[in-house]
Length: 114
Image (tube, rainbow, N blue to C red):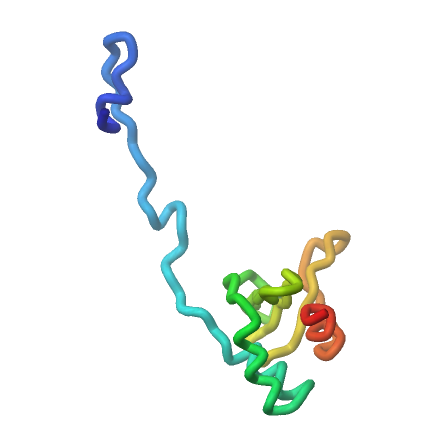
């Protein structure tokens, strides 16, 4: 059965329009690992950059006004997320404020790791 056939119900011809893939999914953008590497190195030292391998890149989200996009990562073992701006500064989502708010980098990294 084709999409066109599925539109025929009780002898009535209907044209079903499928949304374009760009309407459903945003265009592909490669992961941005630099902010996570920078944050890990600045808090725990350059050797900690290897810990990047323990994270998944989730995607980009809108950050607070004047900050731009945030990059969201998730730790593969703890399943805790971490939102960083392009410079590696940490942010946390607060439901009561309905937005991301700047938080302490070390606290955010430790929370994601343990």
